[in-house]
Length: 203
Image 1 (tube, rainbow, N blue to C red):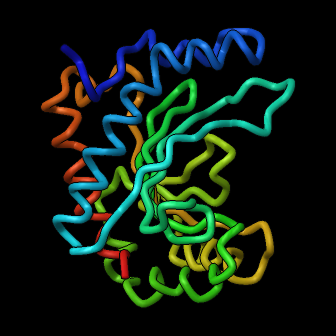
Image 2 (cartoon, rainbow, N blue to C red; image 1 turned 45 degrees about the vertical axis):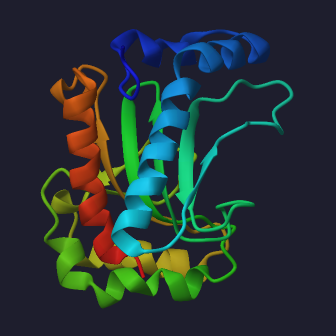
């Protein structure tokens, strides 16, 4: 029985029209895996860091008309929420699955927290070539670090520091037909490898 991974057709839930209908599809095809992944990696992160982590599956509770175009589980050290802290995410857009670590604009200590990427600059710019940067978690757009100049990467960090809506995440993604999604063992191995890289920026 598949517990963690996603099939290609699971990504098609984002084609379902209507808020209630798409939320129902998310409940059936996406959220069970997100809950399982959240539990697994909260325990994984605790084993590595010695800190207690809590999973938070996106509820999309504020939506009244427009159905969500992405969804995720966030993992952070606060049982009440994650947006105010640096945190990890595993989630999906229609065309890709993402794993990432960083800071949302709601984080009141964002300007200070994002400095971890400057303090680990060589690690950041020498990540494997499939690692990316996301400057807005609400948009699917992500840029491969290997395709950016050091000036462009630094500009993203400075924007997160100085712009209220600025965000900075280091990410890795998979297309719906990626071989890493073929079964749970391959998927978990990919995620664990990714988390081990992302943990280099966790303080």
